[in-house]
Amino acid sequence: MAKIRKGDRVVVLSGRDKGRSGDVLQMMPKENRAIVQGVNMVTRHQKQTASEEGGIRQKEAPIHLSNLALTDPKDGKPSRVGFKTLKDGRKVRFAKRSGEEIDG
Image 1 (cartoon, rainbow, N blue to C red):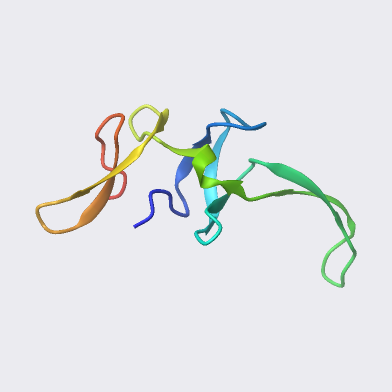
Image 2 (spheres, rainbow, N blue to C red; image 1 turned 90 degrees about the horizontal axis):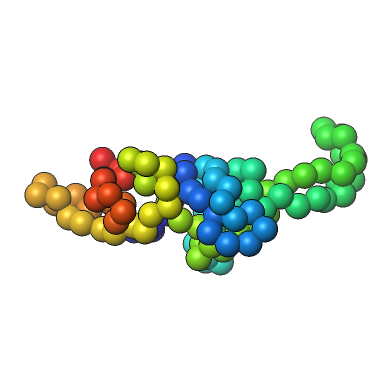
């Protein structure tokens, strides 16, 4: 089970986007990276195609998971993630900052 998943709200801990937050759009577990909405924007020159206009585009680049932290559901601040098994046998993630369950 991954500590960060697609759809989670995360905060950037280091780098030029430190402090910014966004939702995880895509996970790349083999590379230990994620694409976060509005974070780590890079400029790319796009060649014109039949369906798209050409020009200079801004898009999100992958960011390493070590630079991300999940936001605590209670106060929205960065939190580490832990795992616990419930009485019914389900394994769930919880925020170590507040003890709040993340998925449930």
